[in-house]
Image (cartoon, rainbow, N blue to C red):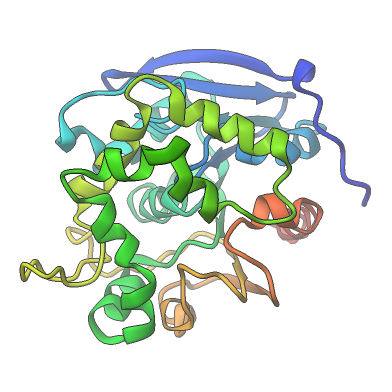
Length: 299
């Protein structure tokens, strides 16, 4: 399969007023809905190559999560729970005229996607997770695995009172360093920087970490937490699920994916040896082909 190259003139920028907030989203194509949820610190632009590919036969949609880039930025930290974002996505899908769809999520967007599948399995044709741990496994690893605990210490930093100042200092030096990979071109990084520069956007994006209290045990004794859906039991996903995990992901370590088949009844797991956390930027063609294969297998 030849990957379709992204042409920004071929996508539409729109806004939807849903769930008490205003979401910016980018869309292209027509047909069954496939929705892409970005991670931190990215925005809809993370999925530009997927929009190009799947708009050939789908209604391909990539929203900015609440607080991020061009979406609204509520000031109340409690407005940023994962479950609130799940409701954003549910209502956006319905607003777009779709009762069922394919949901793709990475990083924070992956946490939202896992949660959506647990809340609304009947609405999903398929679930695709890109480098985002299942909440049960992540919670266990943050309590018991020193490797994952160390890799997730950035979450404690994101919850500090001075987190905005820390991440924005020296022209977002920390965030730039996290994305300093040869496959992320200067123009792509510039688009991500534009999102961080939107008034209030960085503070709003960080509110998710405050709202969920994600991370290992903190020095003040706050307990570890990796489960964003503690009110749901059992944490079994019944939707046909594709998980792609990069072998060299610095932030999601092996313990957070070990035993995944215990929590997903219909699982396809793809390991990407040597790949980094930024899988859609590093391997867009592989991501597209693998999702195509998954959807072609009856999902």
